Image 1: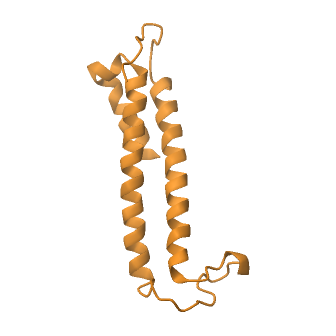
Image 2: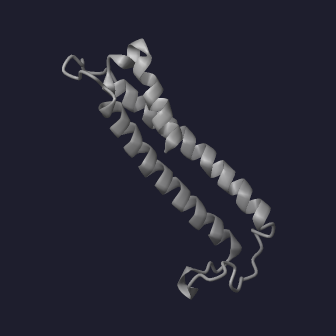
Length: 118
């Protein structure tokens, strides 16, 4: 969230992006996509480090300590799927929200905006 805010806020001083809020928003959304990809790679590496036998077919018992029975994964790879799902969904939602809000909130005068060519 902080990185997307910083990136979009830095675009205010650029000549092309300064004149259009839509180009700032699209740039922030593309940065969000790149951030989600990087976060997914880092989460995958971290899960492989903390759970080295991730692809075993043995059912696990209490893999996640203190979690209810319903939230316990049946196989170790299901833990990776759950963590990646949360990472992708939450980073996308928060990054898109910050990109849209920052691109329109930092614009001084939006009455002179021309439609962006997409």
